[in-house]
Image 1 (cartoon, rainbow over the protein chains, first blue to last red):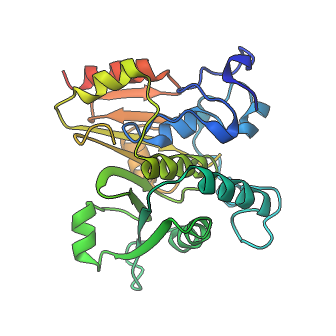
Image 2 (image 1 turned 90 degrees about the vertical axis):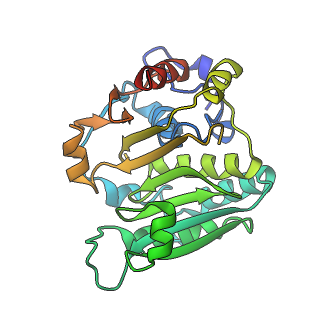
Image 3 (image 1 turned 90 degrees about the horizontal axis):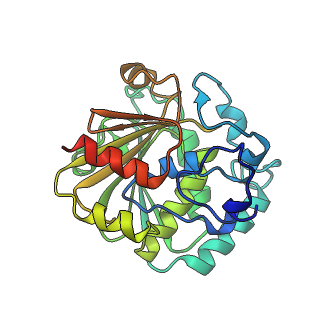
Length: 219
Length: 57
């Protein structure tokens, strides 16, 4: 995928200018990278021009679990994707990142649809770098952690480097969300965002509390 | 990362239909800022920022 400026005009304006797949210009943790990931389309969306507003209700979650075409050794991440991501992490990660995953406890009272799949996916994801640590908490029984991260639904993922900066993924981070997860992990690890300086300056001046919720789907 | 006052959530719409319904999510992406401002679809980062600033006025 080439530079965004080469993309045909029929594609929706990317939320953040993207370069190649391996060099997403990343908005940083200020805005949920979900937005970014949803809006800065991964390479395969080039086959779907005009898809900037995807109707909810397409139940393709099962298919979207397989990010590559063939999932062989890992159930969720194809060997090709694993190799690509591993390489990126090797090159770009600096500090350790902790993934705090909340899944339903044994009672199943939380009624979680994809908790186990999320856990499996993130275990595979964490194995792609020795700088990524996955900590699994039970909801709601791990009360202290639940309160600390303010979790009210599962599966929930809170990413942090040295402190919680308020990033949450609710639901399985599959499909498009997976790319977001990768970018967030790298960004946290490097302690840097790629917001343009103009936007960044204004962002840093905000003194009120801001909560951004972005609804996404895997496909 | 850039501002501790700001928190961000990605919510998978299919798994949380009650929330999707609450915010009238008929397509994605849909962003809700401080329960006040809604953005449907893709917008450039500068436009998104303007909406954030609008939401905190």
